[in-house]
Amino acid sequence: MKHSPGFLAIVERSKARVPEVTIAQVQARLAAGAGIRLVDVREDCEWEAGRIAGAEHLGKGVIERDIEGAIPDKDAEIVLYCGGGYRSLLAGDALQQMGYTNVASMAGGWRGWLEVGGRTEGAGGG
Image 1 (cartoon, rainbow, N blue to C red):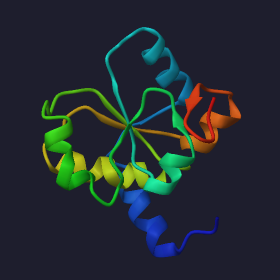
Image 2 (cartoon, rainbow, N blue to C red):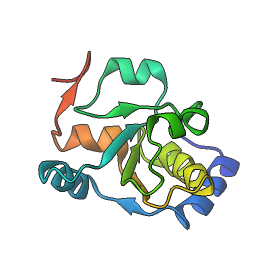
Image 3 (cartoon, helix red, strand yellow):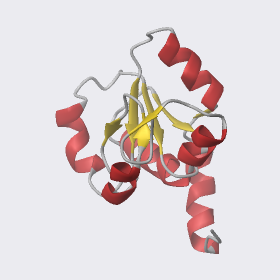
Image 4 (cartoon, rainbow, N blue to C red):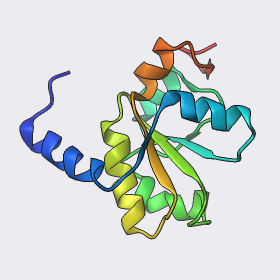
C-alpha cells in the first residue's frame, strides 16, 4: 500500500518517540509468560478475519477512549500491532501522551507475524 506523505510524516514523528520491538522479541516474551498485553489496533473487520493468538482488540479508532478501562495499569507492558506497524506507532504515541509508560509497537505487524508462521486464531488463523 502506498501511503501519503502527510501520513508518513506523522508516523516518522511517532517512531522517534515510541519504541519498536521485533516479532522475535514479542514471541520470546509471550513464550516466557512475561505477562505482556498484546493489543491489536486494526479495524474490527481485520480482527475478525484473523489475529495473533491471545491478543486483545482495541481498534485505533477507540483505543484512547477504552484503554483505561481495559488496561488501567499505566505501567503495564503493552505491545501494539496493526497490519504493518504504522497505525500501532500512532496509537502508541497517543497512549504515551495519556501516561502509559511501557508501550511499544511491533515492527512488521500482522503481515510480518504471518510471514514467520506465528500462532494465529480466528477466521484467518489457525
